[in-house]
Image (cartoon, rainbow, N blue to C red; front, side):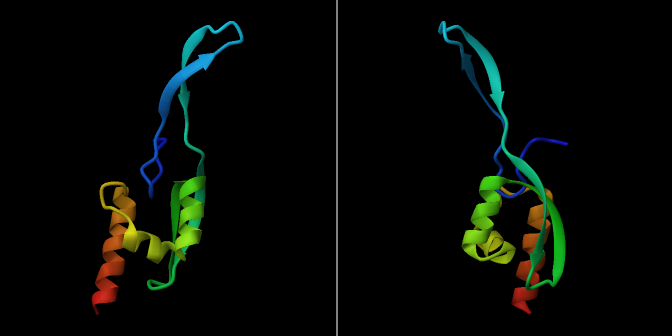
Length: 94
């Protein structure tokens, strides 16, 4: 399972651990990923996604999964999220 957010595309970053003596050694900063079930109002269906805490706050701020996916860029989304976005677009067109 990769450590990448399915909605925002956030992944691991690298940097240094700096000791009190100013010694530097490489480390990884991992995103705060959570397994969440989000409900789509238009589709009337729930989806299990692995998203970062930051993306979860953004979903709440924008008013739900449907509104988030409408504004989201396709490049940042995972294959699973893109599939949901296309289903939403299809139901909205009808």
